[in-house]
Image 1: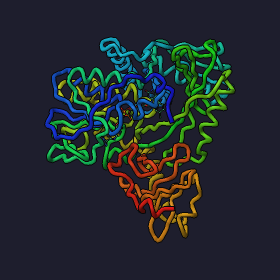
Image 2: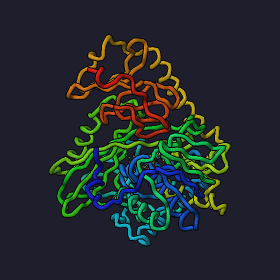
Image 3: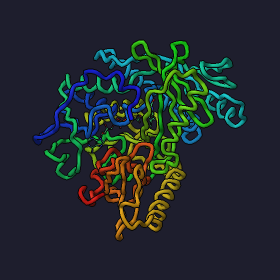
Length: 502
Ligand SMILES: Cc1cc2nc3c(=O)[nH]c(=O)nc-3n(C[C@H](O)[C@H](O)[C@H](O)COP(=O)(O)OP(=O)(O)OC[C@H]3O[C@@H](n4cnc5c(N)ncnc54)[C@H](O)[C@@H]3O)c2cc1C
């Protein structure tokens, strides 16, 4: 499962694993766009920073994103206006514009070669649809009232017939993986100590100590830049985790559309990418709740069909998926964690986190330095917004309760592991225990506990990505139980020794 961005990765330095305990000013957990932006800014301000990454820098969700940078939001800025009003909508647009400017500035200052370029963004309908046409009008109006210059488009776009649409100039695109890897090199050059393959397993907030398998880091300030906070957090109660898919195809240079293309209806995001002499077009979409996907690899097939419908495809090349966490009230949570003055979090970015993550880097680095930041109150992670959050909280908590009860009461019972066939993954009840059982196409079987260690929900099989996914709070695990992402610190426990499994 490689995103198109992996094509361009050549000389990415490897950072060591943390093996000796350290004392520092700031421990940043997570080497995505958020963690590296925080770390770089703090180190430039003279702080000693240690960054711990579970895998490799940039290879979390940032490296599987679409690389679009914009001051609006994918779900539409009118959704913020409806809920929060004009002042907040303007703040969202202005703060996000500043974050895109920072990305541009950092690419220039540190010579990060990630194909950053300013591009237009199109949001459009391909068929007439009265309800969506009305929402496009509302979007135009909300963008204008937030101070953005937006124009109606009538002409068709490459690959798409347009029945109605809008164009926003001066947005941007880059290769997100190359950018984050470049940020890591920049951060390292100004003194950030980066450690890869160093997953944090526990945090002792009383002792200000972040613990990995082999060592620990004592730090005055701790930053969760892990996409969703690790462990149990109040913020998770209303946050919706979902997955989305991407595919790429080679096309002729003339068929590659330039810009950010958002086709409304069953929402698809389309963009092109050039690598050497080759031109690629990619489609992203097919969103569903984590652990709730029913189509397996069918999601990738649907995206390939979509590309074939709109472009003259020479060959299909890549397929990948990624995760997003959406907040209950529609704005990200950035700042101090509940009850902890020197622990910080940045989450709830939805589909727009390259820019939110950069903004989080700006806000958190100011908070740690006890400096004013004009956006910190707006996105405060401790805000309490019951009216604006109610719908999100209710829907998410009903979903979690449904999964807890339904999954608990209705396990599939099997007599023996041989009941799970090659290529199948199932959560089953065997001898009274919930097990997550996967048999690969060679017949080898892996068996782990089917209970997520985060908050004891049952994991579900993800046939598209061959993983165990928890529908409650978005933790994901490989077939051998290792944590891939989400709030869980610990793996799914292994259950039966490999030699007994067949
Ligand atoms: C399909 C898709 C396309 C998207 N496209 C766009 C886009 O075009 N534009 C946009 O603005 N947003 C986009 N997004 C959203 C965006 O990808 C994310 O919001 C953003 O990448 C989040 O960055 P991050 O640094 O917070 O998280 P990540 O990039 O996920 O980084 C978190 C890091 O923390 C590490 N980590 C986790 N647990 C631990 C631990 N215990 N110890 C140490 N490290 C740990 C992970 O390994 C990871 O590297 C997209 C999302 C999806 C699903």
